[in-house]
Structures are given as C-alpha cells and as structure tokens.
Image (cartoon, rainbow, N blue to C red; front, side):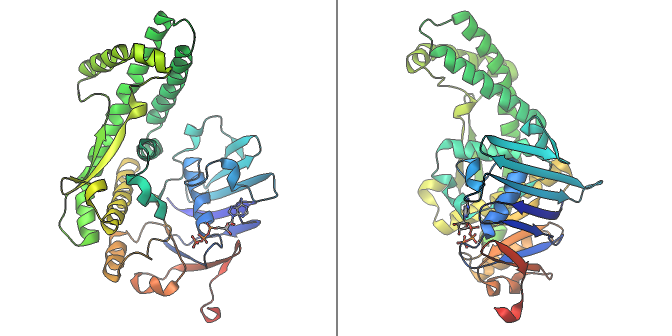
Length: 368
Ligand SMILES: Nc1ncnc2c1ncn2[C@@H]1O[C@H](COP(=O)(O)OP(=O)(O)OP(=O)(O)O)[C@@H](O)[C@H]1O
C-alpha cells in the first residue's frame, strides 16, 4: 500500500498543503516546530481515525479556524480517496467523499506503522495505552475484532450505568454479563494470537537492530489463563459473580478485558525495572518492525512506515542496522532536523521535502 497524495486544509500549522510522496523513501526535513510531526499525524489520523498525540480531535484544527481536513489518495485499484474532516461538533470520515457511518469501515483502508519518540513512554504509561497498542493494530487487520471490541464497550457502558442505579436489576445484569462474556472470548483469543505472532519476530528483530543476542517478549495479561472456550466462559463468569457486590459498591465493572495489560521482558526480566533507555528504544523499534511483518502477513501488503525523529538517539551502527531492516519496497516517511544524519544510511535516493512554518517544498541543497 502506498500513498499517492496527501492534502491538508487548516490542519495544525498548515493553512493548505499538498504533498506527492515518493512510493519508497520520503525524507521530511525542517527545523524544530515547523510541522514535520503534524504531517505524519495527518497520516495517522487517516489510518486510525485518531491522532497519536492530540487529546481532543479539535486540537488538530488550525488556530482561529473552525474545521480541518486531511485527505489522501491511495495507490489501490482504483485509487481510493480517504478524508477526515474535524469540526466543532465532531468528525466526519469519508471514502470517496461519501461519509461512512462507522469508523470500523474506515480503519484499515490505510495501514500505517508509526514510530514516535513518545512511544518510549509505553512501558511506564497506564495500561490503557498498552491496550490501545493491541486494539489499534489488531483493528487494522480485523473488522471482526473492531466489532467485538465496540460491542464489548457498549455492553460495559450499559453494565456500569446499571450498577449506578439505586436498585440493582440482577436479571438484567445477568443478561449483560452473558453477552459480555461472548465478546470477551473473541477479544482475548485475538489479542493472544496477536501477541504470539509478535513474539515470533521480536527477539530476532531486536537482536539485528541492537547487534546483541537477546530474548525480547511481550506478555499478555487478561482475566483468565484458560484457553478452552468453555473453561474461559466459566472463569470469566465466576469472576463477574464474585465481584458483583464490589462492583455494585464501586459502581463500575472491575473485571474484564477492559482491564487487560501487556508487559515486556528483556532476557526474562521486566523491561521497566531492567532495560536501559537505549534498550527500550530498540525494543520499541523492534516492536514496530515486527508490526510491519504482522500486517504484511495478514493483509498481504506492506503498510506505510512513519519514522518521526528516530535518528537523533541512534548511534551510527544502529542507523545502519535500522535501515537494513526496512524493506526497500515499503513506503517510508522519515522526519529529521539534520539531513546529514540520514543520507549516508539510505540505500536509494529519497524524495526530500522541506517544511518551514507549515509550508512544504522540495528541498534545495544549496539553500541549506
Ligand atoms: N492547532 C494548531 N494550530 C496552529 N498551529 C499549531 C496547532 N497545533 C500545533 N501547532 C504548531 O505546530 C508546530 C509544531 O509542529 P510539529 O509538532 O509538527 O513540529 P516538528 O516540525 O515535528 O518539530 P520537532 O522537530 O521539534 O519535533 C508548532 O509551531 C505549533 O505551535
């Protein structure tokens, strides 16, 4: 999958912008705070329907404006046009300028894998950040997962509002619990499959990046360790029942996949208490590169790779290692403030665009 064109209107510090990327390697160069990350953010929005960093969608609207629009054309047959318009009241997602009613229809049309410096916060972040890591990636390749997840979240909301009522309707609670259990079985099975797949390549990719033999793995923690559907059903059901009184007092559901978490181990030890900053960076990069394999295998096509400011903290050898692991076939967007940090490591001539105060233009060597 490749992006043929990106167009932005009132997006962050862009008034209006059009960019025609190279199908392979794109270098986005610019001083700090010029709009490099904003450009990548627009691609993330079109891939996942959300920004990787904005708290509210409306943060992406250019100051003083009342809407923003990001649009891209994909090299599908026929070419697909995806647009996201954010306005005061919400967001409209469109395929070929026609609004879609559910975000699950939109997610996955453009698959992008992003590395951003803030990804390093992953290990220390609250569990919901790591859950989102699974949800976004599985959701991109599986509409069934998205359906199960949104059904689960809807049921959870209903259950929590039931718990807030003065008189608990136990019969209704029982009905909701049974429906929730079925969605949870799907979600747990797909999260397990995803993590198992990621673990197949994490150690290998890490070792190649860091040039040290190491074991890296992700562990998925959920409500049950059972693997057979009936045993899983029984255990989840038992936990819901055991916690019912507590849930009633706290007015919220305390057990379920909405409390799942991930942890990461390096050589069998918890990353949080063991790995250095440099090792954590390598683990995140290995995770991102493994994601490319996961998406490529599931969808039979390569996602777009977005590398935001990845180079500044990598030594020369790790830069060489990183680029040797990126397939020349993948469409890559990489931001940098220093072109010299990058050019020696690229195997093919990139398209270089310079961003200056939200204006994008071809880079001219003699001007820099
Ligand atoms: N809603 C908005 N409206 C207008 N400008 C905005 C908006 N949100 C962010 N900006 C501006 O965008 C710029 C930041 O852009 P961006 O994060 O893309 O920087 P960058 O080029 O990636 O820089 P760095 O190299 O420092 O990461 C800042 O000047 C900021 O003020």
